Amino acid sequence: MKKILPVTEAIFLCFVFFLANIRSIKFWSLYPPTETISEPAWREVFIWLFALGLLLYLLAKNDLYKIQLTAMRNQPLLIVFILFSLFSILWSEAWTVTLHRSLVFVFAAISAVYIGVRYSLGEFLQTLFALGVVVLTASFILILADPSLGTAQGYPYYGAWRGIFWHKNQFGNIIPIFTLVFLTRLSSPGTGTGYAKKLIQAIFYILSLIAVFFSKSAAGYILLVIIHFFFGLAFVWLKFRTFIRPVYYYLALTVFIVGAVGIALNLDFVLGLFNRSASFTGRVPLWIILLRDVYSHKPWFGYGFGTIWADVNFRTQVRDWVKWSFPVMIGDNGFLDILLNLGLVGFVLFLANYIRAWIGSVRIFQKDLTLESFFPILFMIYTFFANITYSLFMETEVFVWMLIVTLMVIMAQKNNNIPSIQQGAS
Image 1 (cartoon, rainbow, N blue to C red):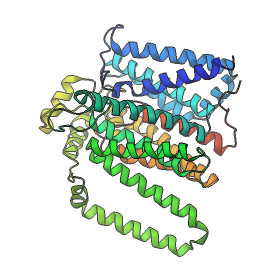
Image 2 (cartoon, rainbow, N blue to C red; image 1 turned 90 degrees about the vertical axis):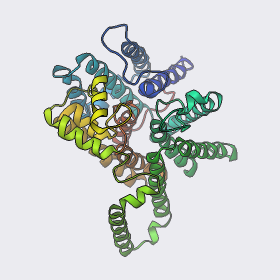
Image 3 (cartoon, rainbow, N blue to C red; image 1 turned 90 degrees about the horizontal axis):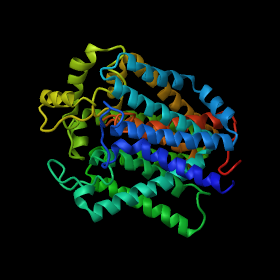
Image 4 (cartoon, rainbow, N blue to C red; image 1 turned 135 degrees about the vertical axis):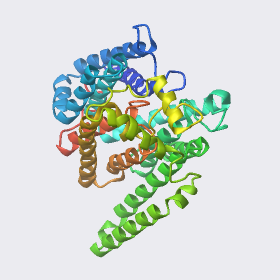
């Protein structure tokens, strides 16, 4: 039995992480049809049901039902948001699409709560490290073995790396998550003793940088700069905080404000360094049109969870509105896409959970003051900037959202002094 449980857990994690990313992988459909039960979308749901069967088995064998339910009850805002998303089927523009997407959303959240209960922050980072190794290795193999699949072949990207993902921007925006993980593991004591393990961590950290560079994703470049900047600040502060006087904090805040204002006033120049303009490659006109001509028609409850971009006619229509040469696939802003799909009510519920995740990440860092405990803050910084010019909350996948929920549960366990259930316990 002790051997079966770890194998079952590993299989469960493989299925969950695969399913959380399945629609963003190039071998699946970004918007699978949902009209009949035989469509790919429902095959995806059936696989989720199998994963949930494994979850029920693990909960039973590890006697975790009560802990799982308690962890879920401790997230009332999350439950309300999920239920609102599910009930949006009542006013959805395409109810089968909303049913499919909301079921996946529910399954991902339940799985994320289990992972948050089951693992400590360090164990979760170790699991993400393994996932990052798999994603990078598979992407490099595909890129080198078959460039026609692993890279973009036509206009306007011409050879940009996309690895196992459907788009080079998906690749360039997701890989920095693993850069964060590799960097945190590499820099934290006790995350692997010996030169061999540190060497492996360093190798995959460097490979993640190479992957983002060749993705030719400006957003990916900017994300790398931002996360390394804040990681560097945390590293220096943790090393020298006992020597820092209050006046230096005021000085640093002044420099930060002046720098932010300077960047805002010279945004064209700054973005020009990444070969981009203040319109974010035409995204600003897109956002204006979506707010003015789409959101305004259903401002309170939206069009139904997951529906807005599933309509191929709508994607083509928006292309004509913004005068792009190819259909618009997503709103290229995670916050805006939630607003379109769930309206102002759903957006407020999302923000309530998002702010709670921010508060929890700050509290856990205040409690431990380590680079490992700084990871949740760094990840939340990532989620904010990554969703300014791309949709990574719940539009192309549910992976990022699942990580947020997992960290919310881990942070609640830690901040309330609830010990994690160690791997392999029975």
